[in-house]
Figure 1 (tube, one colour):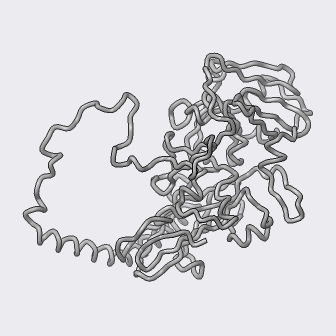
Figure 2: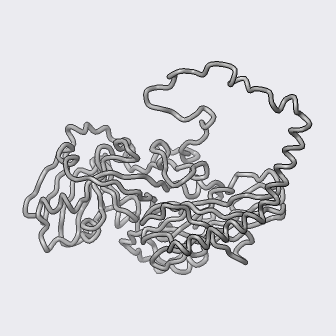
Length: 419
């Protein structure tokens, strides 16, 4: 988007906000009336201002305020015997970065306890020089930090079956965005001498499932990272400590955690996770393999399911958009169920394969409403409706649901999933 286009959109946004401002001013005026009726209380000093605050009472690793204790990852309900996933509370977050303690989890055989001093990465197969790297070796290579989203291919999958999930977290919470730090995989592969015949790579984790996926060499030599840090600190154990592969824009299961081995070959290995799972089942019973990139998608996070608008007037509709095929170029918002659309403002930074925060001014008049968002990415792809997703794929589709998410606002202000 050019600077002129950005300026024009911001000007339109401000004009819309001026219209909304009347409602905001009305609400403030009401508050002033209340304040005037309680002038004696209005200027009273709060009790926490009258006493000395606490010292360093928190543990050495800082914690959120006790008043934010409900902003946590949600577990499956009912919880399985062995936990496999937890979800990010997207509706409670601001900006685009997910704090490390709220990044969603997905694992296949639990979280291994790996001593980084003993961990090794083996690179072999179609290379001139098979090599074994320690963590000390890896962190000595030139590093870089990039902001990318990470999304499970099963994110929002239950909506395809008309599930009764209500919140953004329950429906779309297998999504996070972080600053990832590590070494370009191409740098290390070049040390090993990639042979021309190498077209695919097998990445294997050191967890109990020995999670493995086949990955095209074109991706491995492009923007793939060997990641050891996340949002400025070393990886959390559940995120692959001490080393994970990170494939920007690709479905999350391919960014192998606890990475121990990369083997180069001529063909995909047809592992369990790319034959019996992570395939797209078609109407004829055949399964489509290797749909790697996550398609363009967006979701309104505020207001959203299980929230409540307390009064009529101005609200800022905000949410997140992302695409595994490039940058977000446009997000449109509808407050009438798709009958009309308006352009939202995209908040900087607008990065490749990253979450983007969008904002849209809205004056709620107290009538029922249906809120939608629709994203367009730099490849020209537009986020589809649920009907279009099922038509393009099949009713058997489970993975890669990028359909538009509708939220219903009732006359009493309650917001619910309108699927």
